[in-house]
Image (cartoon, rainbow, N blue to C red; front, side, top):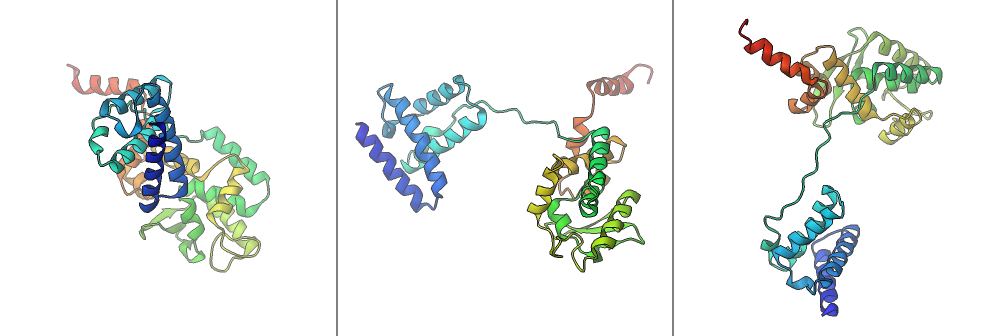
Length: 279
């Protein structure tokens, strides 16, 4: 019977190939099914004869072993695909699985951490890197948007930059005085022709090269973008304005920043202020 189950797995892997699955995916499915097969055999069960109860019991077994919801969900996905191959998809219906708690906290830099970072970047005396960090922190643009910037997108007289996002939409972001200063220092030193941020060979910087540079300062562009949004929210800027400046297509994305900084006492104050007898 054990040979039969292994043959079933081999046939399933061949089916996955015909379905166009990548070699990495097929390897993962193979490993997970072998583990499941071994567990079943301890209970004198065979892989090709699994029932809905067998699937649920295995998920419970993994959860008791301390496997994360992400891991158990991945395993269930493998078994679900296998059930589809068996033409018995119902055996994975209504399987109960613990749900992971989503991380609500957004990683941002504090005011002091921002000052430390900017001081360190300025101290490196690399005008281009300094301009890049200021641009990311003071405009909140994405790395892809930064790399796509052209000289024509910057209007120093109006003190603003025209950013084109991945969806082809434009948004205008005002430039801070500090950013204008460091951007001017950089442009005067490098004299780029078309792209704003270029390499020593005057070639447009790639996203990877920017990310690599930021690693030297133990920071990433996403954290700088989060910090930009959070600082605006903390200063009382409306969600609509922050959403437009950040280029969020869904305002619910912007709402995360407001949610992450509201202390529980504020909710209590809001209710008392609104529904107290004196009001």
